[in-house]
Length: 88
Image (cartoon, rainbow, N blue to C red):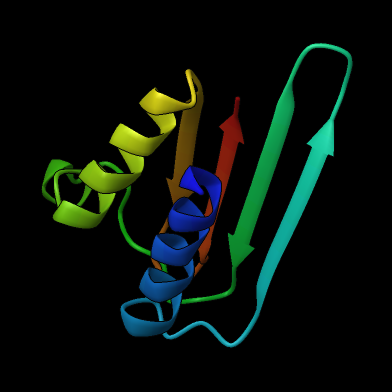
């Protein structure tokens, strides 16, 4: 359920804020880890801005990732979409 809610938040952000027309979601598993790789082609944002990372949606994602005992990284730049890797 937590993974679903994380994806729900990411998709919502991509459509609402990022104006994305394409979203790519990959799930992978190796011997010791599971990965969710998420990409969109939206307008992106400056990922060095702390104010964006502290929004309610990001806090919800962080708490759900923490519950899964995972880690996640978000990379984005203006006009370059969003790329998220979740390792859990």
